[in-house]
Length: 172
Image 1 (cartoon, rainbow, N blue to C red):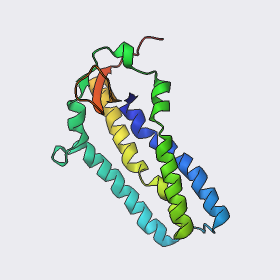
Image 2: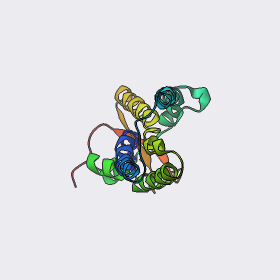
Image 3: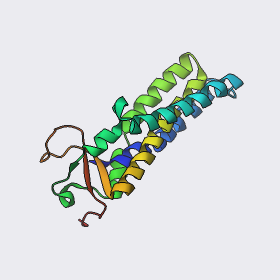
């Protein structure tokens, strides 16, 4: 189980880790030239669109917004026994498999086709940062912590949203 805000915001670290591999590799194996004006004319509006899409996907109920999931979250039956420490939550949120997949796909495409694809790991960042910030705001307004994960004793099975009070779990 991980804190939902950590799950969203750790994308920045995942993107940095992926780019720490892809950009130097493409620089060495192919000429990763300075991005052209077209790159910025497409990249900046794309990132802005993704940030706005992230905000709308959190707030607009008709779009199946995540606010429905936040409000439908179930209370944790025994938070002290299942909640990780903040450090554990951050560590569990970092998905090495996602970073590996991103590195491999970006390297293959950047080396075979377009070197600027080395910057592709930045694409999910605006959406996930906005979702994380919105979730943090929601948590603060409601005085709760939102969790994402699976608890065997809870209904619904696989991935689910759960909440607990802001109070920290007891030290183990």
